[in-house]
Length: 520
Image (cartoon, rainbow, N blue to C red):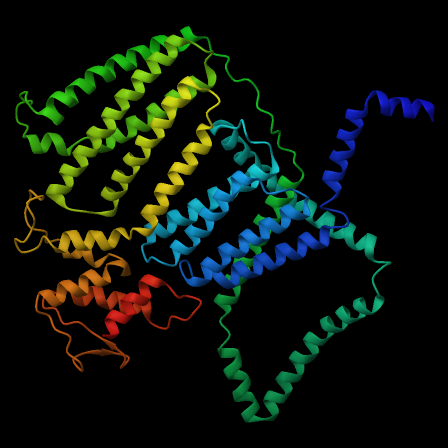
């Protein structure tokens, strides 16, 4: 007894650590297994009901909110407090959920969901682990580890079910077992009776056939798949993270000798300085002669994707050098010059893209490239701080900057502005900003989402295409637009199909506005 007391006194920290580890592993899977199981079950049911055949309706926003409630509930049951800094993630996730049912743009909807997923993972990890010193590499490796190791939780789930009922069977009243057995027996009996009654009465048979015909097997399979998918993903992920097997300690990664990287980054930086000088001389100032056969417009319109790629590669190089190279003033100076040259590349790419738009008008990809360049500009501003101050939370800074700028993009309705700019430049009416021919790619505009409907309707009215009540109807409810060039007609026909039979579950702000316009 005295030896045991002496052990506890001498190695109290180790004993507490072992005790905490045991509690951490048994807390979720013993007496609280049923709580987590039911919570995940409800979460999966809500997901299947809200999201099946409804990628961007009001119900999807409701699912995002319910998903956050589910995560907060699990964290509370794990006795984890929500960190103040992670409130930003909660707000951003809900905002993106709202943005999803405010637009009909499939590209924005997809990126909203990617953003929601990434922010959710970061939020959960921030509250389960000490991530203050985590950077890009640690977050990425932890995410990969979670995705791989969570698969093993599927087998443990069945073990937990078995252990739970094994431990609880003596505490549960036997009438529940008999009730469950009665339900199982009732299913085939009821089926046989329905068959016999249907053959006995023609009216009952017709009623039964109507009920059966209204059951869509594909929908049942689809909803079941959505339910199982969300249940497995949610339960396994929270189960694995709940064990806290991920190591949240950050080792000192500064192992590279400065001379290992100085030659390479010096040569790169010299090349970037020369390239930047050419950009200033030829593109920004334009005082020198271009290569033979090039016009200024052709020179300006090419290369923006390459420069965007180089800028991203430079970001990786700078972060890797700062994160893995031992402190060196020379390395800091060289990386700073490289970052400043990258600013010039970003500006060059932006000027080229704007010039390209002047000749070929707007598309979503061109808007997205300009947005990406804006993000890179702010990111490199933080990177320069990070070069001279290693404690600067560069990962959190990048996440916050990217999220805030993306929320602006998500609510901006790019298709609306694409239609607004392009349609205002038809038939020789383009502004002095545009340098090419009048816009005439109506086939491209037909593919725009319902976000563009207000602009298309206004353009049609300005062109003299009138709403003729009684002209053409769809299902005796929706008014068709008459357009000899078929652009407006085809576009509105597509929108009509999108807005037909939409209920509160599929309610979408953009599609609702388009529907009101079409109804006239």
